Length: 349
Image 1 (cartoon, rainbow, N blue to C red):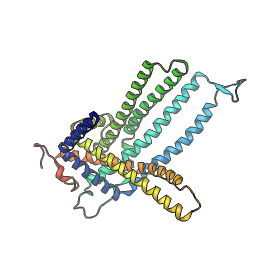
Image 2 (image 1 turned 90 degrees about the horizontal axis):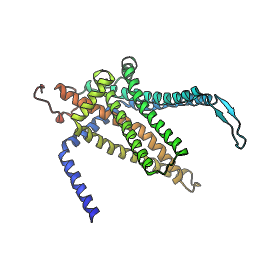
Image 3 (image 1 turned 90 degrees about the vertical axis):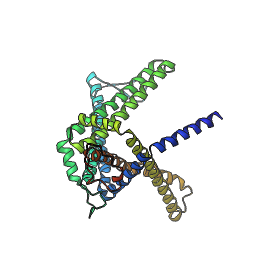
């Protein structure tokens, strides 16, 4: 009875929140509609995550080879009672190993940030060129080359600094895990104080990682929108999210729901088609469920990569929409978003 009462109370509060934020939820749905229009008119943007993934894989191969050579640097120690030998490293070798590990985090983060900036730049081009407006005679495509030029020639330093912050936080988390692993080898890992402290620090570092990534992603959008430095854009994006917390929260909630539905649909369709093909073409296979599960996992990874473009473009469109409100104009605003414009008294309607 107590549990049922708590659940009923939470459901009632949730219903009240939905009723109070109904306009923001409707805006979030319209943002998703505009994002789908952008992705459908600019299908080439879906290739950006693929390019980032390929470049990351190429660098990972180079990194593994370099780490293998660096790992072999040192004096060989022959262990009498061991099947394998070990290396005795000098002090500088450890520093080089940590340096190469940090370089992996930084380069991969830079490639992902570069991709996110290009998506934001293309979305801004599409939004402010009037292609999202219903009165547009011919829907056009955002220029991939122009977005690349913006990223490479004008804002490469800001992207590198943002990716450096992300890599730094990731490195701090790895160092913390390494320290805890070394302590548990020699210390009492069952100590309740130690376990509580470890969980608290791990939680704080996880929150810090999510916060830095969130601020960096929104900063890239503001850089593409206003062409300012990373620190200025990060502060403006933080202030923007605080001022429009309801809108960003509703858009994020709808984006998560749409993403879950999309991933579930892709996985279910892929698994079903796999079972149908195996039963029709390979009847000798007695367990079609096993390859269907493998295909659904691959489909989940691929779907997550492509749906990330949809989610990031939707967030960028929300930034552009708020910029329209701040400027007091609606010439290039998509028709689906015009009813939600709320101009200040100082703006010209």
